[in-house]
Length: 86
Image (cartoon, rainbow, N blue to C red; front, side):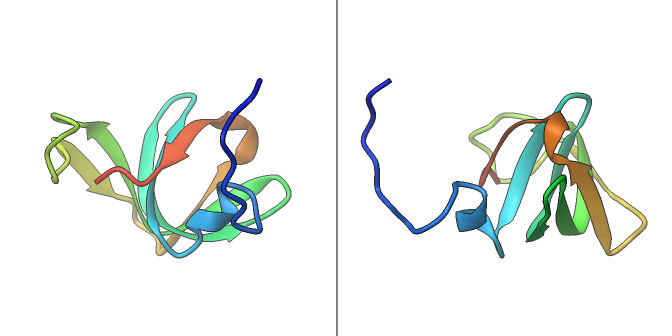
């Protein structure tokens, strides 16, 4: 595959450290500040689970619920896609 590359000295996920990201995993959608990337997991601070996205072009989620801890960890193997969304 050929593609345009803008070298930002790191992998895509590493470039999002410190940003509020949305993680589409195999069962749930998570959102929170990406504060760590390990060998097998990522760490989200101020984490939430998104139960209903609502329209993607709106700034607010349809139904998002905070998790009861300051940090949450997601296995890298369960991540399907990720990025900055809302």
